Length: 264
Image 1: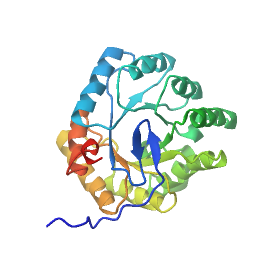
Image 2: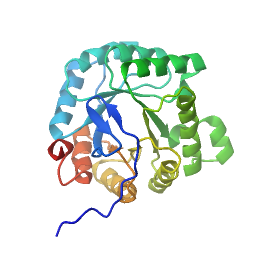
Image 3: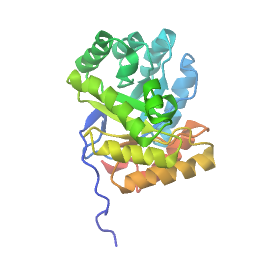
Image 4: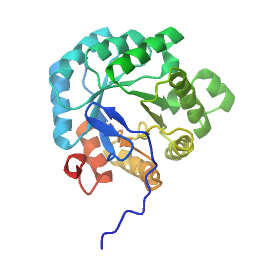
């Protein structure tokens, strides 16, 4: 007998990554990341198309420099899926991919530097309706937080995330999602649980550097299963040291009985 699911989803603000709704009453979005050289446009396009065929909703692409930003623009023109640009420090790369049609910026405002640079990126995102993903990782916490906590902890991850959130709040920009990833399953789970109580934006789930196909699947299943059972999580990525298509195959186990496109 099939009744209502006993899991009560955390109510989060709905944002749009291209044509894909994330948060609110939307199905959990399935995400992966290309592992090709972004400057190899043909290889990256081919991989994104394979990810789409496998059932991905959103794909993240690394954009480490301006050459990659120009390549990103050419890739974007040849694929259907919404693309997230992964940018770390250079705000000008963010501004360029915003011009070239990016669907989401993965950027940590606190890493961008001066307030005027953060404001420039946020205003470009606001102008073009582009959401932002704040991505905190236990392996790259700010030095003062490392000193304060001595080692990565759930509280340190959340404090880092809330610093970046504060930048966006100050600029009155609510259209963002947040991830607080760690390779330690229980650290990640506790960080997400803490953060879920403090913001109403969507949460992107993941266990970082989860491992190869088998070990990564097991680690991610434990961590993400605990969070999804709590009703936490609006978009997920399984990080595997494998072909990204394998990430999607594992992800789709979580969004059963059927992928997003069949449930609408």
